[in-house]
Image 1 (tube, rainbow, N blue to C red):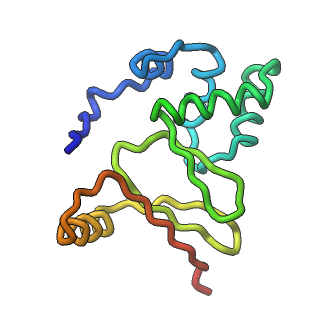
Image 2: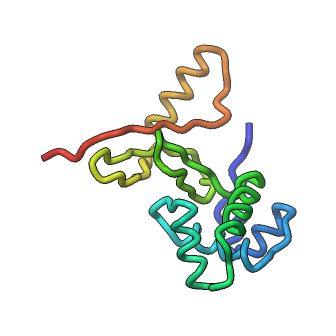
Amino acid sequence: MMTEPNSEELSTDPAQILREAGLRATQQRTSVLTILAATTDHPTVDDVYDKARQLDDTVSIATIYRTMLLLETAGLIRKLTFDDAPARYEMTPNRDHDHLIDIDTGELIEIPGREMSELRARIVNDLGYDVVSQHTILRGRRKQ
C-alpha cells in the first residue's frame, strides 16, 4: 500500500516537482504546473492555454497539449473526462476525492471527506481486493 508523503515533504516549486519526476524544468512545463496549482476550477486545455498566453504570448496550443500529456503521463496532473464535455485537469491530489457536476451550469465541485472512500474501501475489501485508486462522479442540480 502506498504511503502518503507528509505535507512538509511535498515541494511547491514547479521546477523542483518536474525534476523530482525526472523531467526537464522548461518554461512551458513550469508555467502549466503553476497555472494548475493556482486554480480551483479544473480548467480545460483551452483554459490553461489562455492563462499560459498571458504569461508567454509565444506559447502555442500544440505545446500546451504536449505538455499536458507529458505531465499526465508523469503522474503530476490528472485528466478528468465527463461525458461529451472537454477534458478538465487538476494537480494529482494527495488523497483521492470525488466530484459533483452541476448539470445546469457545468460547474465541477470537489467533494471532500472520507466517508465515500471508506465505504468504497470496505466494499472492495469484502470482495477481496485493495483499492488502488478511486473516482466517483455525482451529477446534481442545486435545490430550489
